[in-house]
Length: 270
Image (cartoon, rainbow, N blue to C red):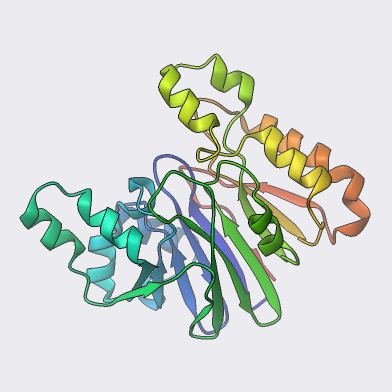
């Protein structure tokens, strides 16, 4: 049980996931406040002071909100793409505020498609279709295990499908039910953005991938970034499990978990 995946929060109000080996602990995204991140790590039985790095997928606030305070308080290296760092800086309109918030002591820039090492974990970032400056998802290899974390994407691009092959744990977006989104409270412009090819993945689009483009390798699938207004947990679970059912013989356990916004998910251990 050396490899652990703990989703601290997933959704439009903040995203943060811990990926850990027996030696290395990486926080993927920092969308919660520093105080809340500490609280949820401890609730999950983890010590914040044992984190080794923060990895950022893109610059949207639900992925970077707590980053400046968290990185400074724990004196952690922060990894992101150059374009993500530039765009994040531009989100602070006041020059002094921008300097204060983005002046990270240890900033490590990486390029999509090029693997790098953090401790004993190999990290491979890959490009995803989302409306950010240079959005990426990640695969992690450690101790003979492959973990994939992909929380925001408009559609299942060919490169995404390829990177997800052979995953032992797959965390992937199941953001909205199309009918709930169409009839929901969002302005039409926002609905169009969510449904676009650089928006968010629907339950139906994920189910289609599970039915026809998925290799069935993961013992655990974690459904992430569920919309609180335009989805329901049982709709997301039902669509995923219905698509996975014919592939049950290929799966070790066919376990489907739902990441939550307000409480950490029980750690997945391998």
